[in-house]
Image 1 (tube, helix red, strand yellow):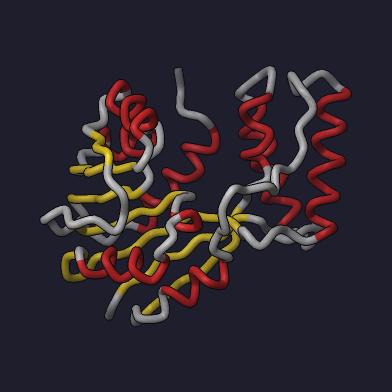
Image 2 (image 1 turned 120 degrees about the horizontal axis):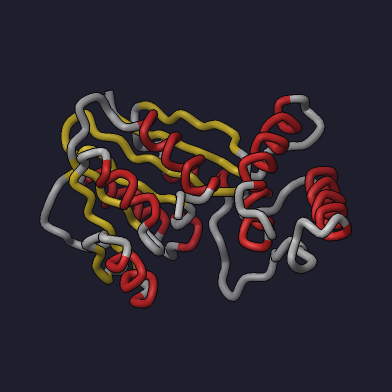
Length: 222
């Protein structure tokens, strides 16, 4: 089965953000290991961790040597890049998570983050998503109605809080990213349609019609 459009979208960002000559990567919050598997296929040495034992088992089935660990964790190694792909907003000790990521970087290393505005999207962007999801369901493209799920059982870190936690780095690059399509992708009758939805969302963001829900950061010293 080919990688999901959402996985490829993240993979391209991470690949472009890696430091030149990178050979080792730590992924914090690897989930089912889809991204780690792609990076491994590129020849990178990937250490993948997740706090969820079931997710780690799925990652292992995907050929990733994942392990159960709660970040920050003492892993006894250093890396060319530390990745947080939609995981950092969940980690309770945000400052500690970022500080430990910086500590385990090799010289010239980078912390690479893909996340979203946990504080919520704008009203017009949310309305755009709601209308899109309704139209897709009415056309039969979605197997079930989809609504934005904004309920969480614990407090999440906002995108500005993540940006603030990165201020100890000499350089922090921040960029918008598509994110709404991720809510729709699992429910599409034709998975290949997710790539078109991604491109539609990116074009709508670029036109200024909606604000991006996704956020990306690359932090490094020097």
